[in-house]
Image (cartoon, rainbow over the protein chains, first blue to last red):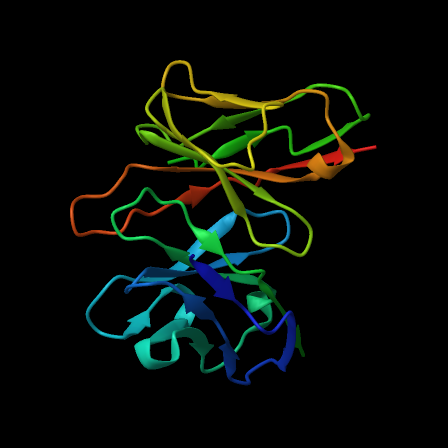
Length: 114
Length: 117
């Protein structure tokens, strides 16, 4: 069965510091992989997605993620965090050939210190 | 493109009452999804429409839940005889689907927060 694990429930970083949010997935084949961000009172916004090809994926707002098949991981990174990045981040996996019935992780809440 | 709209933003109800939520997708999006998000969890898929046809329902969607999309535009999600365990954020998303070999992109609304007392 498909599953997504985000081992960090809460992370605090200083503004300007680098960020890495971890995501591990379980799936029998190469899945579709996504990162979404959810700010208070806002809907989920897609940051980036991986389908195939280059394993380093660029997204919006300066985020990137790297697919590592050997580690079943799809970690999200940003070289320099801004205060406006404070939000909850969700990793999700989708099955190829299926409807967009995404399986989400439990999320990582990011706090940014000035 | 005005985004996905959900109404109401918040709903407080007493256990046993019925509630109905509305979702207005982005115009011309033929696919509409409902997800549920409980505190400390990621969203969970509930059901999916292609135009007016409800094509898939999660086992999470008990018989107290019913969703409709009568004209292939807006959708409603009704919960009958609400229970405290129904308290959650109900999220709606829409998409225009995807061509072969592409990934479908979902656009989410801000959700309806349901509290059952």
